[in-house]
Amino acid sequence: MNVRRVPQAGEAYDIVEIETDRGTTTCRYYEARGARSGVVMVGGTGGGFDTPARELYPRLANDLQNDRISTLRVQYRHPTDLVESAVDTILGTRYLEIQGVSAVGLVGHSLGGAVVIQAAANDPAVGVVVTISTQTHGTEPVAGLAGRAAILLVHGDADPVLPHRSSEEVYRRAHEPKRLIIYEGAGHTLDEVAESLSVEVKAWLLKHFPGMLV
Image 1 (cartoon, rainbow, N blue to C red):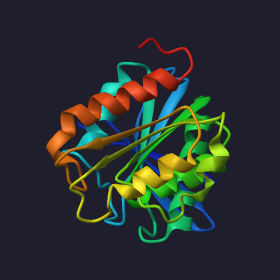
Image 2: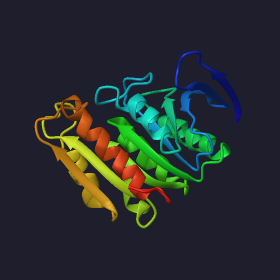
Image 3: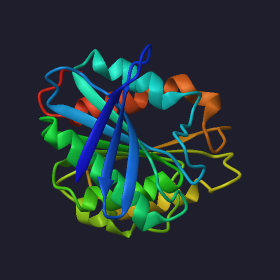
């Protein structure tokens, strides 16, 4: 793959363009110098650099730099295509690994929940996964993460797009270490519990990255 990195004046991230024979995957890279752990964050079918929970992704990306964790936010080439979106995510993990990251975490919202499970199944460097308001379609590989990747599933019980039963079903098929959080009264983007969600996601990542103090 060919990679182009473009600094962005006044921003906390650089634009990274990963070119393959499938097209160009565009990312936002929040680098932590010397990081050995890194996180890839992906959204749903909305496309762009969409994020749940009141700008959870950029806020968390900035915060994780203080813990020497780099973050890559990936923009899908085809945001309604599960397979191609998983390819984009895997390209993101490969980029982090080229930067010296040896432990990878994945965070995905909505369709992105299935995307990160698919990607985790295809990259042994992934040791921690977070799904937010996930769909069930495409999550079958979760059982294969047994003993390799810790998974946190988060959903709101007032989600009008994907019922919280989706996360409950994936949780049942997953193996330890795993955790399920259902927020009362929260919708699909979990804006109502944005601060709590941020704390929970960060804590799960830190707990399951090697060498991190929680």
